[in-house]
Structures are given as structure tokens and as C-alpha cells.
Amino acid sequence: MIGAQTSETRIIGIYGMGGIGKTTIAKIIYNRLSSNFKDCCFLSNIRETSEHKGIECLQNQLISGILKLKRMDINNVDEGIETIKNKLSTKRVLLLLDDVEGQDHMNALIGNHDWFGKGSKIIITTRKKDILSVSKVDCSDELKCMDPNQSLKLFSKHAFRRDSPLDEYIDQSKRAIGIAGGLPLALEVMGSFLSRKDKKMWDATLKMLESVPHHDVQKKLKISYDALDDRQKHIFLDIACFFIGYNKDIVVHFWDENKFPEEAMEVLQNMSLIKIEEDDRVGNDLLPFIKRNRVWMHDQLRDLGREIVRQESKMKIEKQSRVWDPKEALDLLRRPKVKSPMQ
Image (cartoon, rainbow, N blue to C red):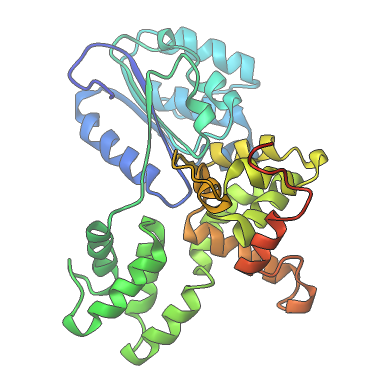
């Protein structure tokens, strides 16, 4: 995608849920290409830096990094844009923008292809798919979860410092990668966590991790949750507790119209918090219809949502706003408020 062997200026994007390995992959590409570029710059943690220090700080880092200066005095975003266009338009650069959060970051840091010299290569990582849905981005790719073989290898590297589990840990290791669901961050954290425990504690620890993600994994995943507004958080938690596996066109009728559920679900999709699985199999009864356009959520995100509900109630079931129960979920979908498939 990045066209390493071409003289074109290319802008590519990598998107996906938190902990999926976007930054890791982008760094590998960046490091492999860096020897072919005189001018390189890696802007890390753009979302966080922008929140605490402003976009001007990022523009300063970019300009001084490429021009090899100790300091630039950019006082506002517009000044930074003009400086980038004037100072870097003849520079063939390799640039990595990590964790881009909004279009304002894109507009202030890379603008268009002609802001940089011919043959420049720009890599963007983001949790938000729509950040990359602009003409300036040549192509983008969603990073997928690891398959079971890759998962077992990564988990083993952290749990046993080798590529495969010890023989006496095989069953428990397979259980662990099932819990992680192919998420690299969860595999690394769980492997390191379990490596410090006696074998007799593995089963108890795995039982806990089956319902509550490790706090390091929660912290990473919760960044996306915290970026939602209250309506979107409400719908995320409802999906985590009730609606995974159900038809999107049916479940939107569960929420009041003033929660704008269709718009909220689009935001959740855009941030890789849910997916809509296309399935054209439609039968004569309700169940096959529900299975078409099913709402899917990664197990770690599901467990995060349910843990948030538990924490909000201070762990008291009778005070929980949602108690997950498959039968209750189906009952909710069958309420009169929900339109039938034919409607």
C-alpha cells in the first residue's frame, strides 16, 4: 500500500480497536523504510499530546524533527500549517502519525500530498475508520485479530519465554487464548500475568479473566469508551449486556428515538467497538432473521462493558442497571415496542 518502491507520495492508514497492534505494525513499517529517507519523524500519542499540550506542540515536533532543529516557536495552528507547507514541501519525508483522533489533526499536520516533497510516505494509525475516509488518504486497512496459532505463539512468548506452551500447560494456554480472542494486547498482558503465578493458581486466575479483563487491558480499551458521549455509552453498555448476536435493524427499536440509536451504532462501528456481520440467510421464523446483520463485539470489549455496569452498582447485583441474561435479552426484543421484520 505504501508503495515503497515507487516515487509517489503516499498516505496510508491503519485502523482498528484498541490493543489490536496498530502502533506495533506501523513502527515495523516505519523502521524498515527509515534507512531510505534522510528526513524522518515519528509523532507518537497524538491524541494524548493534543489534549494536554495542543496541536501546536505536535506541529512544533514535526517541523523541528524534520528540519533537525532544537525548537520551533509555533504560536497557533494556522501559523503551523503555513510553516509546514513552506518549509517541508521540498523535503522527501517518512512520517508516522500515531493515534490520530480527529480531522483537525489531519488538517493541521499533513494537509495534502503537496505539503511534502515527492516520494514522501506517511503512515497514520487511528481507532476511527472515518478519519481515513478522505481523499488525501490513498488507502487504508483494518487490522484484524490474530488467528489461534499466532495467538498461542504470542501468548507463549510472554508466559513461557518460548514459542509454544510447556506440555503441562497446553490446555490452560488454549483456554487463555480463547479468553483473549486474538487481541494481541490481551495475549501479552495475560501471558505476563500468568507467568508469575504457580500452576495451581492458573485455573482460578483464568476463571476471573473470563468475566473481567485484566486492568491493563481495560485501561487501553476504555480510552475508546471514554471518548463516547452519554447516549453512545448507554447503547454500548446495552449491547455488551444484551444484544450481541442480534439483528441490528431490530435492536435499534429497543432504544428511545431521543438516544438516536442508529447514529450511535454508526459511531460505535466507526470506533471499532462493534461490527455488523453481514449474513443474507433469511428464514421464515424470527431467529434466522435476527442472525442477519448481527451485532458483534469483541469478548474483551463485552467484558469491559459488563464490568463497567458492575462497578457503577458498586458490585451489588440488585442495583445494577443491567443484569445480563440471554432470556431477558430475547424478552426485550419481543416487546411490542420492537417492530416485526415485515414492518
